[in-house]
Amino acid sequence: MAGRDLILDPATLDLSNVIADQEEIRKYNPQRFEMEQLTAIVYEDLENHVCAGYKDLAYDEFWVRGHMPNMPLMPGVVMLEAAAQMCSYFSQKHDLLGAAMVGFGGLEDVRFRDPVLPGDRLVLVCGMTKLRRGRIVVTRFQGFVRESLAVDGILKGIPIPVDLVNSQLGKSDDAPSDS
Image (cartoon, rainbow, N blue to C red; front, side, top):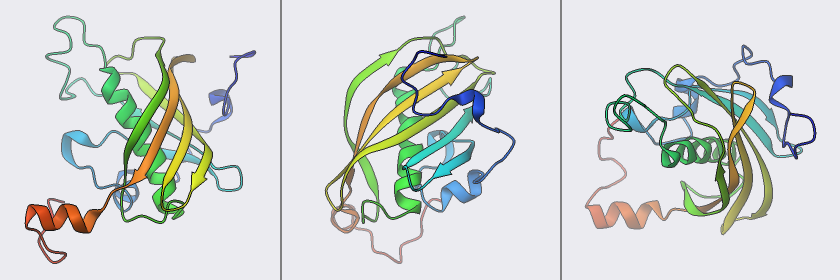
């Protein structure tokens, strides 16, 4: 990986040093069931706003049968969701955006460079580049598989107006959740 503009060299990560498992991640991210795309967080640097974690891909992921038959490739949109969930976890845990929920605000310069397959571990690294509290958080992200850069780009997160969404759906704060 020498020579690449890495946020963090994945070879330096101790993937066995789990800072947050799925239960801990659920405290900050609302996704459940098939939409949970993180297995663990293994690195956090609040001073430099860098976070790393991974997604272990099982052979029974919801997309395996249909994307594509006899050649199951992790869909790019699911890779992006995994990166977004890690960025959201870090932002929410440290209350960087000041929002009840962070949602997709945009993507830039996304590149898919290597296939990601069932049985792989997608190691994700993100580094915040811009923060306007209450408005937007911008992060660079990189995803690695088998020591190779598989995906990278820039993610933008924006506050989701949870109260407005819930009122339009007819939900109240005391309504039971799906978790």
